[in-house]
Image 1 (cartoon, rainbow, N blue to C red):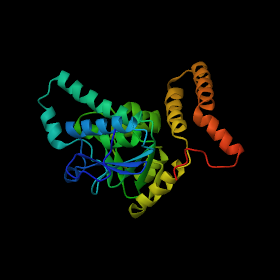
Image 2 (image 1 turned 30 degrees about the vertical axis):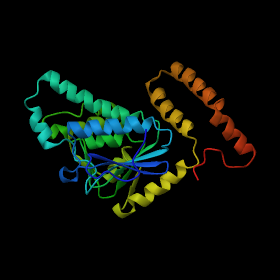
Image 3 (image 1 turned 135 degrees about the vertical axis):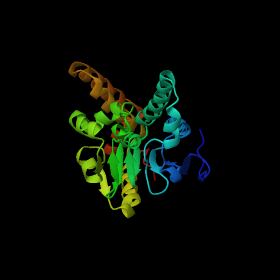
Length: 268
């Protein structure tokens, strides 16, 4: 798969590549990067392609303009008034497929949140591995204010913020600040808006010395352990570490450590 080095400005999702680093930018600033069927499909396709690209080491997910994501597009929601239940199910399944594509991406995904992450925007924060938020950003699971519920994003959001926080925030639909998002685990770093890219750059530097297959395996083990019973977890974690230790990267990492040299995967 080939990713364009230069941005494609007329697409719903702009993809920019700098060596092994890729930035995926939602490009609907006029509607606060709100979701419609086309944006959902574009994000899904982008992350599926990037997941399969061995030349990609890290991905930053961003939103063009002043807002990361304002949730669902009003026009899209208006059209949904005339959809049947079966058509609504198809829409929901498409949203879920997009979230799964990001959640299961074997590359680390960093969400760059400015302005607001509301509704489905919170869902994007939930499926990112690391969320860097501006200190004036606003979050909210606001669906109940519109008479709907945060159903499709709930598996990812509950896993991120826990049952207690989900019960409180899902039912009120209240908006909350970035410090609260950090406290409940939805965000990891909160910085002034002008420092977002500086903080992200420092995080990306950490990945330069981390083994790509180990990162993918570490992401998978988190997901697997959460879904496993204690007995299942013992077996799957033993298999996971044994597989990684005997892998080419595992062998190279140990040799590099003993020989006091950079491992072969170091991204210089």
